[in-house]
Length: 268
Image 1 (cartoon, rainbow, N blue to C red):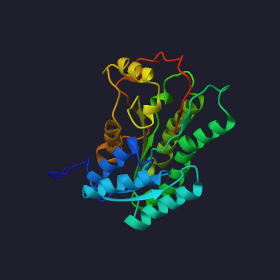
Image 2: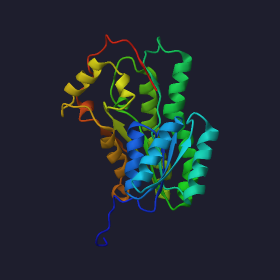
Image 3: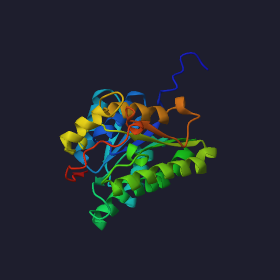
């Protein structure tokens, strides 16, 4: 290895981060830019995407914001094309956008089910479908999908979200199998309870219980998940593909918080 070579560096890379306007996505976009990547920040909330772009620019990084509805194939195709047109290639895709409605299969409407699957799972399929030819043309790279601890643990009242995130992990493994020989690695991160704007809508009792029932006795921060994503996207993870990495303070080894009496809420 050459002296001084930093395998965590993303210098010379082009990255797309969906849901990049807030929370884990914004932290990921900023961290990748700080490590040298040029970043396209995709978010349905255009103002939030612009705030992330300005933060990166203020810190001397390269980024552009784009309004993208990840439920739209046309928007996702345009997103990939824009990244290549602006920055000259594509090496990293972070499928991070999500939507969820809490409820059992009896409680959920068909529209709630469909929207959750579209934003949280179908977008991973479509985003990857359009990005992979461009990553291949750039010589290879990495896809990192934001799943959830819900993919591997049971929680009452999350029928749509858990099935979508379980699908993300299965699709991650399949893409790793299909594209590893082309120098395209595909991994997933599984955040646990993480304090973001969306998480702030969760009942306070769940926040307290979530912290108490993790071995490290606290909830996570968005920057902690961003660190895991940036690692998996970097050359430091060159032998890692097809994994689902919990970033949860050990929550998945504990089980379900007891908050079953709380009323369902909508997170978006």
